[in-house]
Image (cartoon, rainbow, N blue to C red; front, side, top):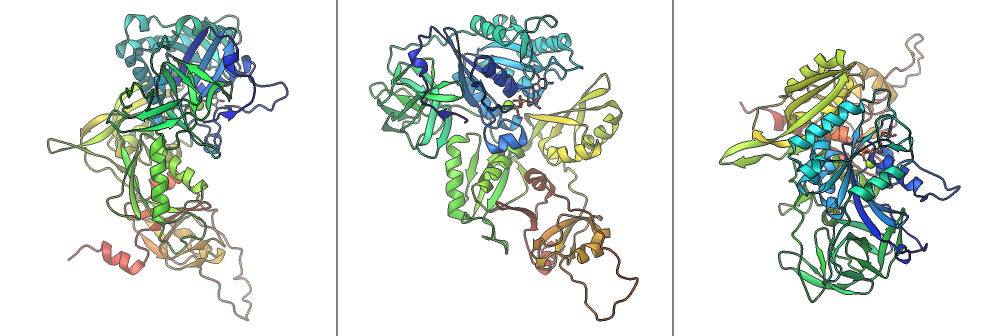
Length: 617
Ligand SMILES: Nc1nc2c(ncn2[C@@H]2O[C@H](COP(=O)(O)OP(=O)(O)OP(=O)(O)O)[C@@H](O)[C@H]2O)c(=O)[nH]1
Ligand SMILES: [Mg+2]
């Protein structure tokens, strides 16, 4: 959450007549956060001379580096007598749970759709959640500046999607705007004069209903987000559902299961621009940030002690994959990280559970191994990345898909995979995806690009992104979304190449890499420290081998002229965390420290490893 505390004028001091709570939802990269920039800018949130960053709400380091939104964020603007609370949501399907939850703060949504791409899998997912919640939807066909934009056709596709998802008559009568969030304009017709976002705010005022909640009854507020601040600890965020919330008020934190404890508001804030401003009281309908409840978690309800009426817990789709998080027992254990013990990892994971609601953790009684389940490799990858930045060191297993058993039958998660590729590459892509148990369901050519839609077991998708990008020289874009569970489809081919494991511990030498260069691709460079059992490369054949990357040239007194040639070896192949997780096999681990990502064999000793994989006679 990107809010800052600011002493500027409280919104409560302005006489506000109207309140609108709007969530911005869309498929990944369709321009939500950029459009929010434009809205904030037109509302005068950025001060004169202030340095501007793009996607200002993508405020944490990981979001900035990856250019994606991971956590939903609140901000607010005032237009005349109207306050608009804006909730920016993540578009990636791994964070779908986040969207579902924060929709509880909104009375309506802006559904953004890319004017070229049209509705994509996550568009359907988020729209379905908004429609089933009975929310008013406004459609914004975005990125209309694109040369390839086809706004009319995209609008038809959006309409069809509404019908298919069973939208009611009121919802089908949705207003449409055309925009380029990047260039900061919005208009009411596909062609015509471009204006700033004023017409967007006018449409929000007209079409999105006010919260219309009762501010006379006893207080009720469900926590839908948690923020953290080093000075004050946890900050609960949610919409006042009933009554008036007052700073200093004594409240009861309650759960539908009957658990409850008492507390007191010790700092109340409303959203104003990118900041949070102190408020003395907030009425039903407005979105509040509340301090004073250090143990609070998402889904709990803050209640007036005289009327303890917790709201139903927020149900979230189940996790689809799991990984083991293990204490790092490699020879380099503790060299790079400062938080390494099972207790430290366990406590950190428990803390994460309070705000990361789609996460599940099982310890199975062990204090050095945790089974962590989430909504995808990216969901868990971001958690691991956050932990390593905090100083943690751990080992992580290959992601496993979580199967279901119904009446003794094994069902596995199935995903819908959408791939856009230059048309001349579609044959290669179909071959790859079908080779991993995918089935082609639809194929649409649009100018030089073709959209392919497959149904594929979630297992088949692990490692798909890097394979597809290599196959298409980076030209393919892909997205996927969970569709449901189907009977187990049989094995999916795994990595073809064997690993090259180091036989020695020491520093890598250029001399050794030069000698090994024909054996495969290497992940290490000279001077890197390696240990025996670490995977240092990918073998060019489908069997594992051991090699010594630390070998030094024997020094002799005789200088053999003509044999001293320059050493030749390729630069190392570097993995991102998710690439490493998708590359490894069941008998391998990714070792993650604040400074390194290494791949290793689970069993480090080569002799033991060979013995354990030998098939009994
Ligand atoms: N041509 C064009 N590009 C845009 C526009 N809006 C955003 N982009 C680009 O699209 C990419 C994604 O923009 P974001 O605003 O981060 O998209 P998002 O929907 O917030 O993405 P997630 O939060 O990760 O789902 C960036 O590279 C933007 O520069 C637009 O109106 N026109
Ligand atoms: Mg975003």
